[in-house]
Image (cartoon, each protein chain N blue to C red):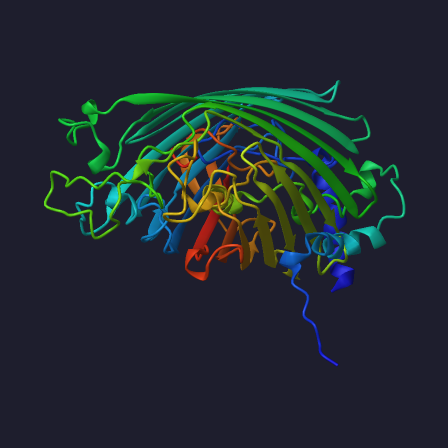
Length: 82
Length: 450
């Protein structure tokens, strides 16, 4: 019996599924959360945005890859690196 | 430890009522010279009446063997130092001014090959950028609108932009819709490879022509609190670009070009590089991009959180891409966080891309720029953040506050991260033609409050 290795690059849907698995397990329903119940959501690491310190990385990724945008980074324009 | 954590977390929640929102700051500040704040939201971790200053810096270094200047081969060695300062100033209780200025100091061995007049050290340039934004909040309506403008300049590129944004938060703070538009007006100086210049066109900047590029983008972000521990945001950013989208100093070599290289005016010889002549990269003058992203953050425990990101990208050049990111912040102490992260990106090639000397002269559009090649990329790294409640340090600055007391600047946080990035070319190419770019980057954010 041979042991096959699975490449995530060849299976992007599998990778997406693995990424979403912990969230799916934690998603009973969409509930109304009161302001005083947001102690966890207000944590610095729960911000729905890239960290400011990530910006140089986001920039070089948009230069070195053909895709960009929808993440707060460059989408074209503003520099000679199209 | 848990007994200590819970009261501290509860205290922080009481102390920051402004945080009782979804906290969406999808584009808190495009601090890279690509525009003013696209989302006008106040960053959730900062008090609304506080002036904040972030000093950003880092060092980026890359290597590779498929430089676009030499038609898809040759060095991609590049270093960049990108310092920037972001200042957010409250003008009153409802309006804020943001300023971000910065520069890119870069040295590129690749751009040295435009004229093959190789220099040591490699060619270098500076890009400077500045962006200014104003936002105003209508607290009763839960809305924030903002406007902004910016400029960036480098030797062969000049760009202006204007931006406008609007955000509406639900009354319970569990949902937010953010809309933003931005337009760039760019001017490109047409510096071409030396052997492709018109006779008599030497090296003076005034002798080159110019072309223009316009970029219009529209961003819509919807965020939603799902549970007490889970929130999500879905975002799209529609982009339309017109004008010169190719780079005038990128060469393309053809497998079937009968034209021979001309001997340049400098004492270099192009024939050993490739026997037939290159042309300047040529791409369509219109491009449409359609990225859609999903962000999910889950507070798994007081020790660890899970931050996930996925993006699907498509454009009319034929590039289809998937990007996944996963970050796991681990609270070693309540104020010291280590966050390992991993990013995976895969993309198909643009239909106008071919490796070195594989285009035909019958092609209408052609490029050998490996940014548009089929590739996958892995990035892995570690970040460290230290942000004690009372700050890391305090010092006096000139001036007095509203109470007539000396103003005190607080050094509130330090964020440092390192990432290693590697591209792997698709197996549809020969081994020698596959992307092989490697990069390392270290960056930091020093956070101050006044």
